[in-house]
View (cartoon, rainbow, N blue to C red):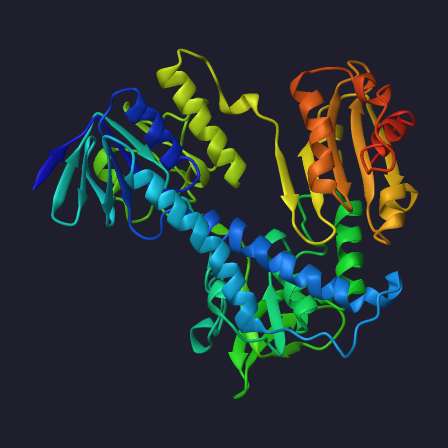
Length: 461
């Protein structure tokens, strides 16, 4: 059985459903193909459920600190993991079900369940159906990378997806990978009551970020009891009959870490390997990401790639921006490009990190005359009043153009406050717009002008 449409959207992550809605509003007949859960990673096993876990972990953490605020609680704080899971699933399911109902209710949009495979440039097979369209949009996302670790086939392990399924409290969770996903789960389960050890090959955490950010993140998590094994080369895994054993080759410490559960958090791979893209002639890079131009067109006319699978962004917000770029160019007569956007992301440990623009290394490599302003959260009234003074504010400025180059705000509200600077960067306005502004007291944002009023040359690396 075959069917002809004006457009086919493969995948229902952040970009796909919104693009389908815009296309059908423009009078097109659209097929949306989804092989698993509507909403993709973010809604089902990523942002939404993990941030629900972050909230539960924070509630437990603050309950244990209640006496600091003069609050008296009877007995010790413990976790009901069944209720934690039920709350998380309820929030994620509501998002999934709402998005599914909305998508199914759109005129001229057909939700096709199954796995899509290209048979030619403009035909896609889903089960016994052959779909045809002159415009095809890939929004297939990524999945957890499972490294080829010696002995891995002998043990049970978890990824970010399967972590959503457990409803017990691990006695000792070993996290292989010291970046965003791994660190968020590390803090979550430490606050739930597990012993947690993070094993990382590099000499520091979140290696792409500035060293002072990495060190402060480590201090925050270590202060809560998370253990670290850095410079952990030659990682292998095995079983000791009761749980898992991770072998590490570190300069100090034991060569084995024994735990009850193992979480692999060492990166992502695109879901492009089973689409039959070679049948359509779509070019991919060596890692399997679809190659796209600045307007997200692939090497084949009439095929676009949006979201994580194109390697041009690894976040829900960049995926949604991909949709905006494609829709604007195709339907609104605009000229929008991927290179128009400024890098921004958050690390959702508590307190969170908000990161925008250049890192210190990138700023130095740009050959600009870079100025930097930095203030510890101990000088922020809101942080002191909440007894949450960990972290700092750091802002990089071009000393000649006066434009803000980047910033890292690690601390209470950092993921929200950083947008004050981000909007000024998009406006290409000088930093003095912020440094001369009057912000409300007591807030975290009120320290941004103060930070920018005390700029100094960025020290050499």
